[in-house]
Length: 82
Image (cartoon, rainbow, N blue to C red; front, top):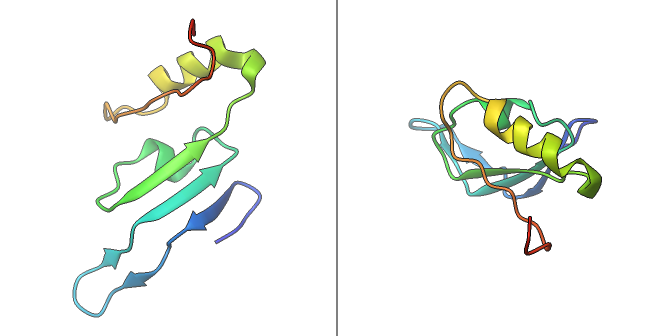
């Protein structure tokens, strides 16, 4: 999958012959409200959103407000004081 909103970096294969199984998948998106960022997915799927360094405070708010499901989110930075 590749679109203006997201690209599969690794994985993405599936088997729907019995049930619906997704192989471990990494997705990169430019939209912090992309479907896999806000909905609970039952599978080994990780979605990455690369934020602008200058929008750190905004990114904290996005992480806090993105999903009503209390999904786990994390922000990684090289600035140790962030």
